[in-house]
Length: 122
Image 1 (cartoon, rainbow, N blue to C red):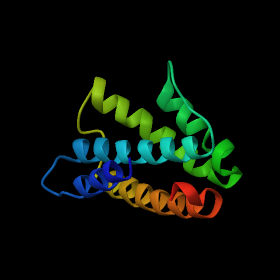
Image 2 (cartoon, rainbow, N blue to C red):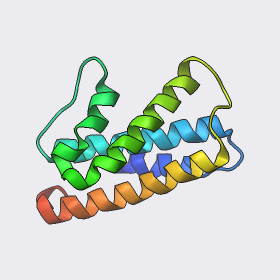
Image 3 (cartoon, rainbow, N blue to C red):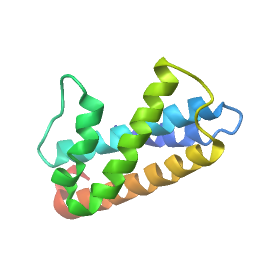
């Protein structure tokens, strides 16, 4: 999972890709970070609306301080759904850069949280 997160963050930074594809790749990185954190906290999300549920339970797994990030990632989920199923060109370069920045920080924060709270999983 860690390798996939790092690969996706690197790929999302490739300027030659479209903003839509970069956004989708960055979104996948953030989703994997969330899944990793939730799994380390002892939970598993599955079934209908799994992406939505994953972001909604972040504050449960990591603490209330993650509510704002949870809301941001859920907004990104909706944009990603629009890109994947309905339209194109709905995200800007700034949207992509913001998601890459947030996902990168999220990955770093989760690694620190794992090291502190679940050192055997580091």
